[in-house]
Amino acid sequence: MALVLGIDGGATKTVAALVNEVGEVVSVGTAGGAHPLLWGDAAFENIRSACEAALTIAQTDWNEVALAFVGMAGADEPGSPSHRFAEMQLRSRLPVPLLVDNDGIIAHAGALAGEEGVVVVAGTGAIAIGFAKGQRVRVDGMGHWFGDEGSATWITLQALRAAARAQDGRGKPTRLSEALPQALMLNSLRDVATLLADGDLTKTELAWAAMSVAKVAEEGDEVAQMILRQAAERLAESALAALRRLQSLDTSPLPISFTGGVFRLTARMPQWFCEAVRQKLPDAKLSEPKLPSHLGAVLLAARQLGWRLDDAWLNRLTETGRQWGYFDLGAGLVEVLPRLLSEQRNPASFFLDQLDVEAILTLINDEDHKVAPAVRQEISAIAQAVRWAVRGLSRGGRLIYVGAGTSGRLGIMDAAECPPTFGTPPEWVIGVIAGGPQAVFHPVEGAEDDMEAGREEMRRLNVGANDVVVGLSVSGRTPFVIAAMDEARRRGAKTVAITVNRDAPIAAVADVVIAPVVGPEIVAGSTRMKAGTAQKLILNMISTTTMVKLGRVQSNLMVDLRTWSVKLRERAKRIVAQLSGVTLFEAEQALEANGWQVRQAIAWLQSKRAEKC
Image 1 (tube, rainbow, N blue to C red):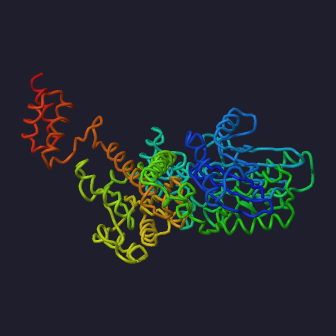
Image 2 (image 1 turned 30 degrees about the horizontal axis):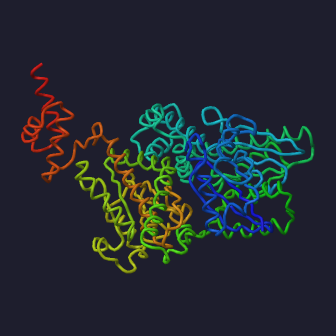
Image 3 (image 1 turned 180 degrees about the vertical axis):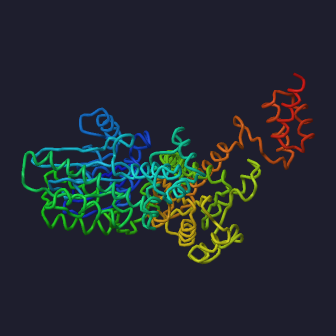
């Protein structure tokens, strides 16, 4: 039976659905974001990874796919330079016939189940897409500098302006003045302005901060409420503008729908949007979104192939689609645990027990080669974790790793290496493992299932707003880790998930998800292998980059290392000599005069040189 792939390549996540001719969702795979401006070449690799994950879970291959339809953030209109570039990149990666369009088109197809009308898509950006009588119109989607009105980014920028006015006495008082810097892990609005000017505050991070605006609004802040209502009004304006342009050809009313994260910021956002539309157009035909974007892409692929898309087909698509989850519609979010990629059998090792030693080792090594490229595709998400860690540690916070079993041991190992390598106080980077210290060496039965113990660890550490808590769970469903992250988030900490199953339950308690698609293990479910290696690489990247940005490294040398052994003292002498331009003998003298503290020895030599001048 022929299959189609429907792919939603969004700014923060890619979802690929594999569907057969009768409308059954066979599998769903996910990967990182697919906006080239945010992810670079990894955007195209993430689309390929999500497709391959779906094929692996379905235990099939590319030969069974008749067509793939890709909706991609940043692809723009067909025929545009960005669209041609995206199409070229994807044709070199997906070995099947494919069609490419921007992600707004598949959101439209999903929200209206392939029918004519107008759909407003509001997430990080905002756009209104309309179709009628063969005509296609687009309103806004111009980017956050002078467009995307009503988007999450726009909401945060408006909130920052209101907060600045309030702080200066030019505007109405609002809790946004304190809440926004705190949400961004900064000390003041001035710090926010500085980071924006330096380019160290990303568009994605601004969009995330819209959740803080919504929280302040729900607590009764009138300024925050006004901003959200204004966002709903701007989105309504875009919808009506698209409708006017379409109905120049047809005076019959067309349906209007909506989708995207902005409509989930508070339960009132859809209501405010509908009220704003009806205020200008009382007889508007407003409808809740019917299908998520990846199934909208499936509809467009199936229609292109001429499949019969009757009510029974659509009902089957909806029913099986819900069973696989990823239904992200309007104000509702249906969470269903998908089949975990990490638990699947690897086709390459079906006959593992029949191979000789060299062949087994070669196969393991071949699979290990997939790990580093998979981690590279997550650099954008890893970078966000580092930014938070740098800000948090700068404000007296901590980087806290939480895991169970292998994941917990990896976190403890990375934390333990920071003091000798970077000279950090032991409380800067902390490792927490389910079952306590004894679990480092021996399994503790049932420890990973103890949710209350996870919460208690966060309470014991008095986790707060300056901390970054990194949850390590390959499956993404370890109760101890999820409970710890939930408690940390409740206390105001930033939470980061490191997993290989992007939409497992851990995602619901994470501010950012790092999920390299490493594929099934050589021994099915033995996630200490590729998944464990990926976690180790990511932890090294987070801690090392954080310490570099905090000034614990000069050039590429460890100027704060602890000189606890003969080997480390020899290394310290080389570092002082290289950075100060002195001999090893002079470096040793400087170190002895400064208690074998590398940084102090370098400063001492510099002061001596200055005295001679």
